[in-house]
Image (cartoon, helix red, strand yellow):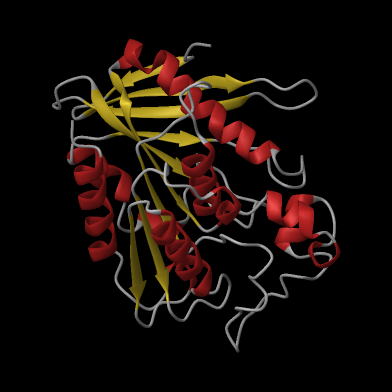
Length: 279
């Protein structure tokens, strides 16, 4: 598993299309990796996991609203490498395929990252919405035996318990999460309302223990897509388990932090990773 292209820039080195998972019958799953030139190696790495309701999205095309402030350049300037992980969408495969794919990216970094200057003991995962769900799943299920443990996670407005998400929905919410064609139902491959075992298996809260790495959960209190109660519930479960967790409820923010400036949230995110991944 090697990269197919490496490009130097003035402040960074890019490794594109590193194949991290090959599943028969599916496209190869790849990782893009960008490292800061100035930072002493090995550097900590942040694995970015895109959102899109598990239905759409690409690590190669971040949404315009996010790139207006470009958190990835900010991360590189702060001394982090940034990896962008692909995963199969729910139209291609049902859960746990998505978790398998992003876990494969983490495994590649732990086993091979040293060859390109990445510190295998300082890996953070960072995702938004569906990507935040997968980031929390990796954080809560990773282990040393399988080379999948991470040291920190930041989850922006992420689902955490598929069995309670509909009951927590905002009064003006835009999604019926229990519907047969909801993003959650399409993820598990069956109507969520009638398949609690599948919903439980795909819920990060199921895997909470005191072994969880430090986690930062950030969520708008006016989120019409994923209710803020999802992050509140996960934070409470982590606290009860004795794990380290920070919950930041952003007043007035909708999904994708609509209605509030992004720059302070990115600064807080990178400050959290700086503390959690200090080596």
